[in-house]
Image 1 (cartoon, chains in turn yellow, cyan):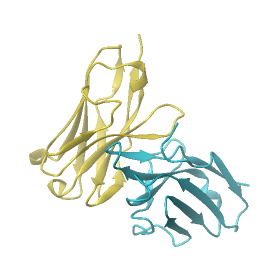
Image 2 (cartoon, one colour):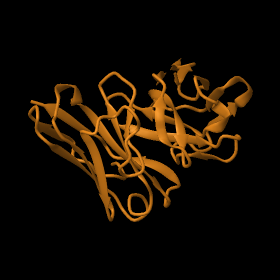
Image 3 (cartoon, helix red, strand yellow):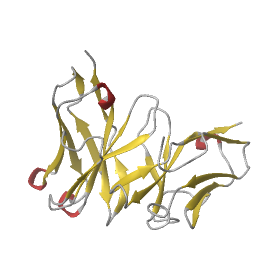
Image 4 (cartoon, chains in turn brown, red):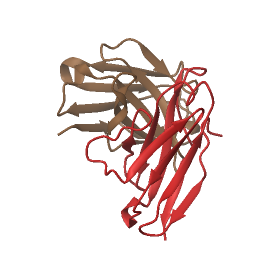
Length: 119
Length: 110
C-alpha cells in the first residue's frame, strides 16, 4: 500500500525556518517524481515545488522561489521541503504528492502537515 | 485569482448528471494534460482523472472528463451523496513553468 506521511509542521514567527519531511513507503520511491502542494485555510490548492526522481531538476512556484528548497534522499525514501524566511502568506497545510511530468501529478497524497506563521 | 477558472459551486440531486467546467489558455489546458482532483473537506485531495480523461484504478466510471481547446470539463453521472466535495482542475502552464490549479468547485448534493 502506497503511503506518504508528512511531518515537521508547526507554528513559527515571520522570518523563521522549518523543514518538512515526507516519508514514503509501499512503492519504489527512487522511480518517482515528487511534488509539494499547499492549501491555505479555506482556500484552494497551490503547487509549491517539484523534484525529479534523481533529485534534479527541481522547480518552484514564483511565490516561494528563493525561499523554499526541495530535496530528497532516495536511500531512506524521504522527501523534504526546507522553508526559510516565512511570511503569513505561507500559512497552509502542506501536502506531499507522488508524481509529476512523467507519472502524472498527484496519484497519491499524504495527509498533510500544517505550517502556521504568526507573530 | 486562479489561472484556471472554475465555477465556485455546482449542485444536483441524487441520480442526476452534473458537469464542472475549467477554462484556461493555450499555455496550460491548450497545450498540456488536464487533471482533476476530488477533496472531501478535512481530507487530502484524491486524483480523479489524469491526462484529460484517464481514470486511476478504483475511480468509478461515473466520473468522466474531456478537453476541447483551452477548456475542460468533469462530468459526474448517477450523483451520490458521497460525491459532495470540492473539485479542482489542474494543468502544467508553460508560461509560468508551474502546475496551475483552478479555484475549486464546491459540489452540493441536494
